[in-house]
Image (cartoon, rainbow, N blue to C red; front, side, top):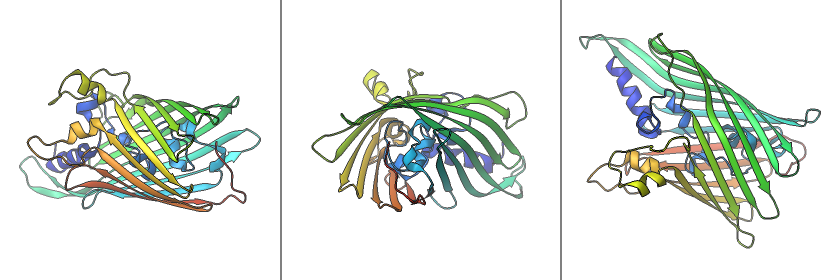
Length: 332
């Protein structure tokens, strides 16, 4: 494997819940949170109901009628040359009583130098990944929602190219009287169409996630708890402090504070991410913590999120969402 490709793979593993945590799966860039709100909520969330349409990429059951004719664009960066773009849009189909959405996630890691076995430069190549998703949701009875998404995955690292097709299936329960939200989703169920080497098939990073969200009745606060990789007992062993530490690696804790329903403040803690990215004998500061702010207006919403990778690096995400519907629709 050429040095340039090795560098690319190392860059990807800095931010992701990588193969050390998820086994021998490929396409771990699928674990990058899609959008500013998802980033602020700790990177994995399947139960938070919001007017932000990109949440449907985390759980298709979160796609709602209130997202009719909404378009969302998310831009993020980490270090020089590494960029991520997420575009999502959707509408409500009245006759089918179905919400339909689509999204494109594009990851660019810049131009990398290609060398031969002797270390001689032979040129350069652009490393990139992308995911194209079509998803939909419907309502069952008064409190249940279900959805599914189909996605095509492409990866290009110079001469190493791969593709796959996968499906996400999710459900969501919303009790407005008690402000309770539950979510369950099975992610990345699929098959590799073409492996990087052209031989054999690799596993996709399947994930079974369960989420719970509760908004307080007499305070503008909302709390969320998300459990990830419930099908796997041990996620990350290195420097683990024992059973309690391994259990907490499954969970992400998040809280949101709403100011007059126009300003949204979010903070979260992802214990697994902190364990994966921590540096021994160093102060790891806010590694594993994320935060965000949103300004929510009837026709436009602007969000910013920051996820701390180390004391020196962070994943910064900016979002602009536009509502083109003639009449504002409410959730759920």
